[in-house]
Image (cartoon, rainbow, N blue to C red; front, top):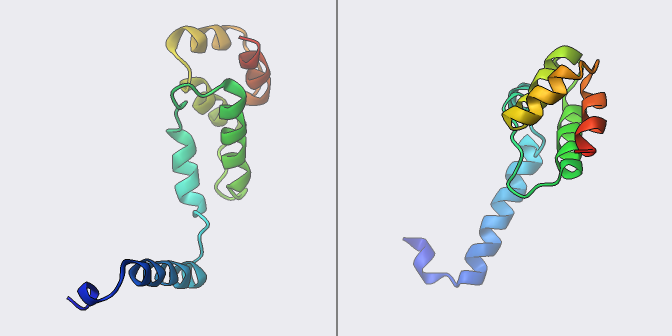
Length: 109
């Protein structure tokens, strides 16, 4: 109960210094295995434009090292799973070769 006698400003400063010390020792970057899992379940945020989602999706892919990066076909499947069933079906029927081609086609819709 040492915290009770401290002012709110000092408590916030202490918490920030603890977080900075933790980040300094352990880092703030997500691990490859976490990112590989996250890309497999990524979802479109409500009211998120396709271009914004593509930027987030591509940014996440860039952070994954080549040791953990999924194959192009798997990335395509992850990307197609994001859309509603109708859009996903249309993109699958167009038989585009990779997720980059799907991103271009999806932007046009």
